[in-house]
Image 1 (cartoon, rainbow, N blue to C red):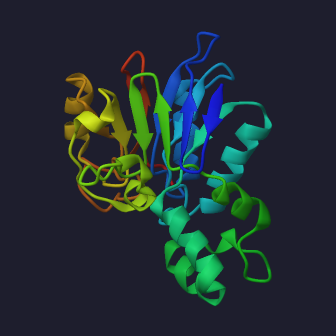
Image 2 (spheres, rainbow, N blue to C red):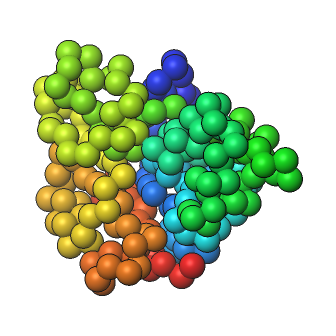
Length: 235
């Protein structure tokens, strides 16, 4: 069961013995996303949390959104979040729609637009409904982080999508934080998973294949078994 307000969604653990799985920053790498889901063995009993930045950079943004929407249509428990790339797209679409092509062409994402140059309706509707963080038993899931410099960090949605570097604070109520947004070396992620760190960035820069071998994987983390699945970029 999930309850939703304007920014957050509280999600109860699956009642059917399913897993709670987390993936972030797919960035248009649909083939890699598909291979990772196959490696994980996703089932309808699992909960799949996707921490934003579905689009841009990789060559298959439309296909990533098509896959996510198909999973939802097929009855899978998929919980997507707002990333800064989705938020930016929505902002441009609302304020300067004539600039959408300028925004998306260098990011390999022109196929997110219809023939009239507008964001395809089903994608626009999907993105507009995305929450900014999930509250789970023992965890907060967010795209970028929380602004701990204010009294009410769970009200700053801009920080949740855009910020870099945040500290663990008592305002987190003892929950661990999983996030993406900042490409992080695989060795650091693996170390944080092994030590069961209070905060873990799961973004290994799947689309950053131009960097060294420490980058270029899409990751999936099982919150309960603490198993980390890795899939090298094949896009």
